[in-house]
Length: 365
Image 1 (cartoon, helix red, strand yellow):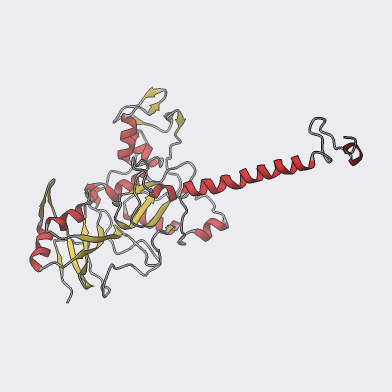
Image 2 (cartoon, one colour):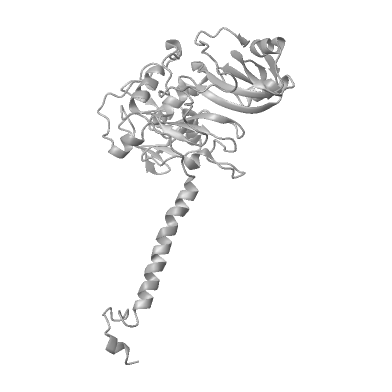
């Protein structure tokens, strides 16, 4: 018999679980309509047409999350109308904003943001700058013009599962800021099992180094041999919180996989290492769930190839490998042309006079 222990969580509605292991949604739609939208009390006031905070405007322009924008402002990389920007300052659409001397194009209503779902495998880091030079998820993201991919939350190096990217810093903020209390659901495999007292303790609270932490929901998913699966739900994911909670009870996590983030599920057809881009309809549903305005301006016409690729899973290649592959044909082609010209020059073409030489001229020695 399956056991479920949960704290008061009004947005949790248990579904029919699988026999063993992590649950993955079989439906085509990635945005779960049954998930509660962000509570109105947590939403920021609707965007005004007048001046707005600089870090928010930069995030809306798709340059990164609000926190990242605050960091680059403090680093002195942003200027407004030729003057160094300061934290907390407001800007208008008429202001000239530069990032490292490059003009930032502001967006008033703009196009729909892009949203990408990635089934992250273990062994990849969610960072653009890693001193250890480990493989990064950002090396696999497709190139986009005039925007930047922002990771919505993070997953540890040894954690797999659902990882979401977007070009909207504001959307990323709605997912990750603690005041919005967006649910994260994980499938956890541990060595051994939990008794009822331990399951109750994990929902009531466990003392960690940085304070008391707990799961909102924990559900027994069965297992085989020494391995046992559980599904847990929490509203705030601090550094390695899931692993640390189990370790506090003397239990070792052998596998950790995120299967849901807010209304976004990890599709069962999306294999490890694959990604897909949400369709415009799904992006609109996501903006409505987040309480964000849906752009009313006509959207850019997509090519038949772009429409065909939307919603389809694909396996990305690391950008470094792609760049090397692109350089090799050009280098080989140039060498081939040089060798061909060199071989044909004695009798076919005189590089000095830029005139074609006859066979008789070539026989004169």
